[in-house]
Amino acid sequence: MPVLTSTDYTAPFLLSNRHVLTVFPTLFRRIPPADYVRERITTPDNDFLDLDFSRKGSRSAVLILHGLEGDSRRQYVTGMVHIFNESGFDTVSMNFRGCSGESNKALRFYHSGETGDLQTVIDHIAPQYDHIHLIGFSLGGNVTLKYLGERGSAIHPQIRSAVAISVPVDLLDSSTELEKRQNSIYRMRFIRSLGEKLTEKAKAYPHDISLEGFSAIRNFREFDDRYTAPLHGFKNAEHYWRLSSSIFYLSGITIPTLLINALDDPFLGQGSYPFSAASSNRNFHLETPESGGHVGFVTFSEKYYWSEKRAWQFIDQHR
Picture 1 (tube, rainbow, N blue to C red):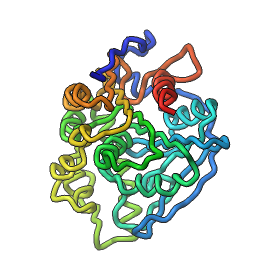
Picture 2 (tube, rainbow, N blue to C red):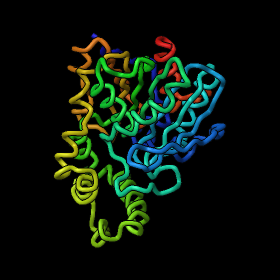
Picture 3 (cartoon, helix red, strand yellow):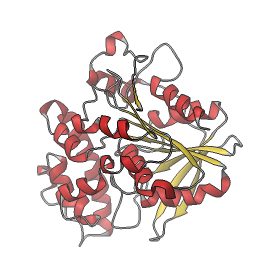
Picture 4 (cartoon, helix red, strand yellow):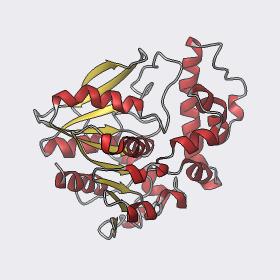
């Protein structure tokens, strides 16, 4: 029964509040930039994806997927790059469509259930490596888990293990959680950032995207109903959430996979703690520290955060 008891992470005394744990790394963590070499690849629909490689000459690679409105330069990504580079792994940091500093070409962009682009990246890097391990954060974690469950035993043979951190595996549940008043700062920050991307895309597709009334949007249901769902072929927000939530795919995971969701994560409702799925699938491991916030897990006493060390430990077991 791979429900793991997590007792070895304790939040620093001054950061015991879950919101402080969540925002502290973004505001105050200082970590050297990764030594990236960017490579642009073409997707089957003639769009592009930007991949940032940090190579150590290894035949093993860690493929890293960022969260909503993130990119390869976020501190939680570069922290993972450094710890795995130091251990001799190459890393490949994937930027979702429109997240690399340049608007993508297609009308569509990225969303929580889009696994086709991940497959494109894996197909591209697989000839270069004997072993590939996946790490996904938040939205990127949901994409990772959904991808693994969809492919099941047909997954690419070079993929050996995966770690997902702070993942809203139940999108409806997490959207409801983010509608709470205490989470408004996160919700409006995301919506504002998505709006900036839509403004750029509307210049290329003025007949397909209207920003009239955008300022009145106050939650993800409204945003996904109006933009995410129609732009990506879904009927509405709930249809998008239902088909894209990785919780419905966890039973299909066939490689060693670890999900780390802190119990105090302000983004997650009870639906994002899939204890029953972990109890029934020997390949799917669930670890739920008492604290950690959302992609937090701050550690002052050591070079790397607890989540980075934990991901390395799990992947090192299956390298």
